[in-house]
Amino acid sequence: MKKISRVQGPLCTRCGAPFESKSSIPHLCSKCIEKPGPVDWTRSLFIYKEPVASLIKGLKYKGDRSCLKALKTLSRPVLEKILKDAPVAIDGTDSESTCVVPVPLHENRLRKRMFNQSLLIAKSLFTHMSIETSIVRRVVDNPPQSGLSRKERVNNVRNIFEAGSLKDFRHFIIVDDVITTGSTIGEMAKILKKKGVRKVLAISVARTS
Ligand SMILES: [Zn+2]
Image (cartoon, rainbow, N blue to C red; front, side, top):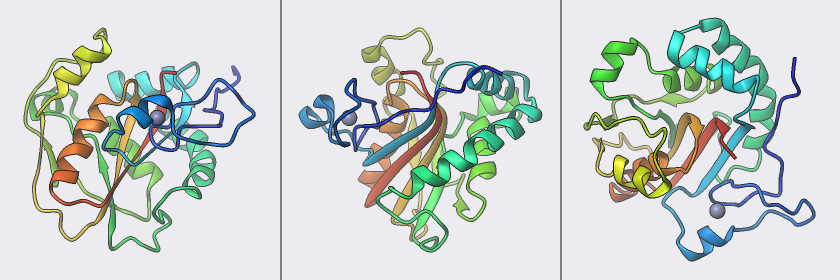
């Protein structure tokens, strides 16, 4: 098996982007200093390379549950370490005020695919947390983000989500399979913050760079 690429620090304390220099401690990147996004803390477990990329694709496009199982085995020890630095407790001790929200699919896509890969990932990684699928809905069936520029991605996800009752949760952890520019998680975090959520965190299995 090929060597698995972890996301190596130092990382931006907000968007999770790795810095070129390996010598300094984690700090904000220039983009987050200039214009901080609505996600307070973002972490990805791996770089989107083989074998992780094939496992994600196998799950997402073929519904291959053995890929989910392999991702779970690879991810859990890495996630455990990463969560120690999270700004809210994510070990089940603060479960009353914190919930996990997988990035929702639009009902049209859910009907075709029959499952939401982000929900499956969330369930396999956050076994002691409340996983909420009814608070945030994807109300616009927007085209896939792949092949779009950063600016087009931001426009493509604008106003595609709606949030209902927060059910007394104050902190939200968004779970996604892959983060590319962060536009989708940013848009989700934006509507959650508008509803009064205090902290929005985001975790993905992989990031593209
Ligand atoms: Zn940043």
